[in-house]
Length: 444
Image 1 (cartoon, helix red, strand yellow):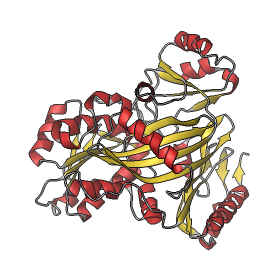
Image 2 (tube, one colour):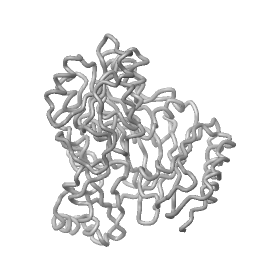
Image 3 (cartoon, helix red, strand yellow):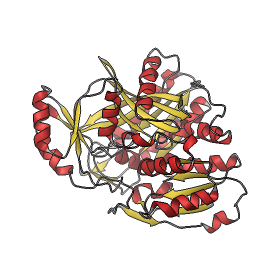
Image 4 (cartoon, helix red, strand yellow):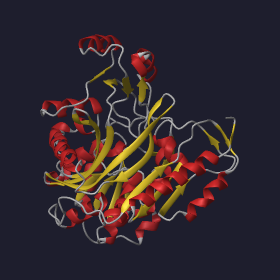
């Protein structure tokens, strides 16, 4: 996003200034400011409040995107401050409130949070000159490469001919490619191009058009298709010290032409042989993009040649993950942020984490388009031995589309499994898939 208001077609809830529900909760003391407190960012305000710290919301646009409407809770905040293209009123209001910190709750708020933190709480802020590298995937890869770390070969441009010349130069003609927007998230717009056939058409189809966050794709990323296993290293940084809250392994599938469709996510124990190398690479990435304060969600492909950055998101792991992480490890990015802010950025934050119980998230997948007729097949989830949480959204009469990205995945829902016995998790995973296969969708 840019710091001017970006109009989009996916607008929803208008912002409010001071929710009446919050007026009675006004508390003396310096508040925390959360920019775009959506998705997992919705956990910040209750967690700060539980620690005796008030919270205010800053919205990077005057309307809440429909994508985030269900996670927007204005009643959690003592004040809601809309940003409408002029930074000065927002800065002045936050300065008058004497905010303790400014953090991003979700992707659209990353750049605005960076600017505000550098202005208001420089001791708890990231490197201002590298803001673009914490949001724009092209700038991100360039910064990581400049730091001497290996990256997936890629080019970010608005010129197809520049891509064509790059493909020849890198000997990638005829190879599998990936085309994606540089400022999207949740796998929005990520398309695999087998053997490179049709990359120009996909490049042109997305260039100049808004992504699901209302950000116009003024350039596109074209990259080699990296093979391997994808992992996530979730971190919290304070005053340049990076700590790890969890490491998870993604299991993804190709769903027709749509690559990277989420299948499952499993927490790894901190002493897993793969973790040390992933963490070492991640710390280098965090330094390269100038992370010094806040949560980061770092996706890494472990290839035959070693770890390679997929992308970094300078906000908490989305989809409600922090509450599940708390169950798995006793801690989360949200919890560490609150503890650090309580102690001026130097709170009691451990370097790593402890896995208290095995945990697996199973994401539902639709392989066809049509109308749901027997959603009750998922009633059997209640009998799973390892069931921890059900977030299944499938209903009779619902029109399903083929799952193509994370947002479509979350519209179907997911199941969280937790158990001391890892084998039980995967046995229950198989049972979830069995139920899914029984789902009747008219129009197959």
